[in-house]
Length: 266
Image (cartoon, rainbow, N blue to C red; front, side):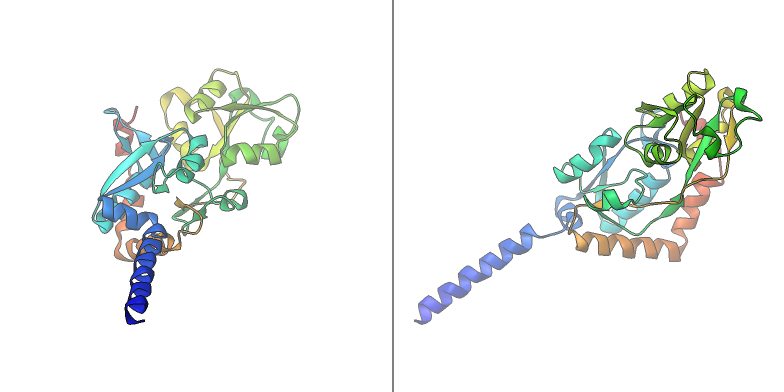
């Protein structure tokens, strides 16, 4: 009886260990591996983008580097198209998503979001021919207008909601969206405010007009697999810590106040 009882305890012990390993969070896996793998789409200035050496840099990337240092691991960035971020997370190709992803109810059904690390909104870039004609997002809600958007983004969703009567042109990169407006192939481009603000500062885009006031409210956050609450708890505490110790403000100033980094970007 004693031997049988001990055997049951031993089996139960190993089953508990196995269950614990199976339910371990993505950050626990990263610590064991020594590498934090993050899925990102490096075309969202100034959050994640390629510099002239082909390295992925940006505000969110610096947050992720600070996160990996706090975990005591290396950071590995896995570059994928934006539409492949959610499937990649589900397939465990990376531990979390760090790619300027807006928290939406629809996305929240497929993954869990951390606390927001910044709030942005959608703005509009206009071709100069619309000067005096378009002064608000509502003015673009007509069948004759061609509006460039980026496929799979909240900019595309916002365009469908606010200017559904217009013809939408779904593209794969914001650079292409701006180019189409500059060359007159599209009347307007809808995208996140930080990107559009920086795009307007480039000489080749200086003739464009802008509706500067964002017409949506969009918190950006990191995404993890559904149910990975241990990782969420750690990330949220990390965000709170860097907000308190000045790290966040320093990085925010680097990318949103100082513009020296523009010279290093393609």
